[in-house]
Amino acid sequence: MTGMTRERRSELVRNAAAICEESKFGKILPNALTLLGLCCGATAIRFALSADWKAAVVAILCAALFDALDGRLARLFHVDGAFGAQLDSLADLVSFGIAPGVLVYMWTLYHAHGAGWAFALIFCACSAIRLARFNVESADHDSEPAGYFTGVPTPAAACLILLPMLLGFQFKGDAFSHPWLSAAMIALMSWLMISRVPTLSFKRVQVPPRLKAPMMVLAVLLLGSAFMWPWATLTIGLIVYLASIPFGIVAAAEMRRHPPEVEN
Image 1 (tube, one colour):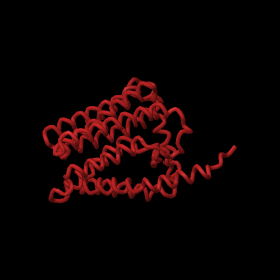
Image 2 (tube, helix red, strand yellow):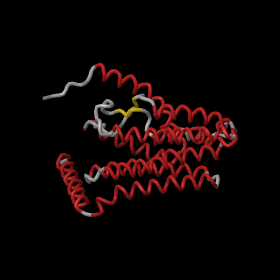
Image 3 (cartoon, rainbow, N blue to C red):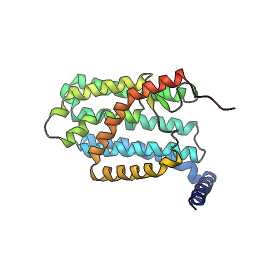
Image 4 (spheres, rainbow, N blue to C red):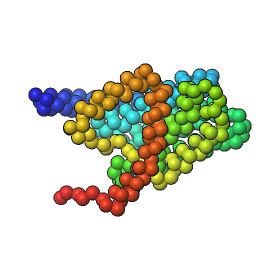
């Protein structure tokens, strides 16, 4: 019964994708989500200029959500062309390069005067380099091991430079709002974006059938935690991701030394 239910669900998804693919809706939806993400990034800048820090962070998180959805829908509807890829990069530069840089500058980096603005500009420039390199290398599937990115993706770097701010939301005092703490985080993330450090990618992760139920339970728990304690949940998630980078380097090196055998 469970097998029939899964087959039926898969068939419904394929039928819906086919209908959307044949209609203008399926061609427009991925790019519409990309533009919504761009608008969220621009709105984050507006909130930053009015010192509404939490609203600005939420706007960047919404941009990250739209960025995660638009590519998947484009592949599902088979409309992932060059136009969508370029539009996505332009939107990412605004939402995850310019917006977080302006937000952190308005929050604390302005205390460092010209040096603080220089760090914000460095982050924007490295975001542009990271996105341009990704566009150039995206057609070369052998440029990096399967399941890995080359360098930290811009959405992850954008969220990570907000980590001191998230900690400041949860703890009293000025310890986390020191401009040089944010400057150090920006310097680290800027380097990681343009580096050749392999970082984990979950785009091609296939969950084994026996783990689907536990993963669903975990997803529900995470969703409930994010609803009840949004800043703490996001903070823990970012720290876990940051801690996973060394493990990703080791795993990618091991994969290069012992590549998986391809079945004929």
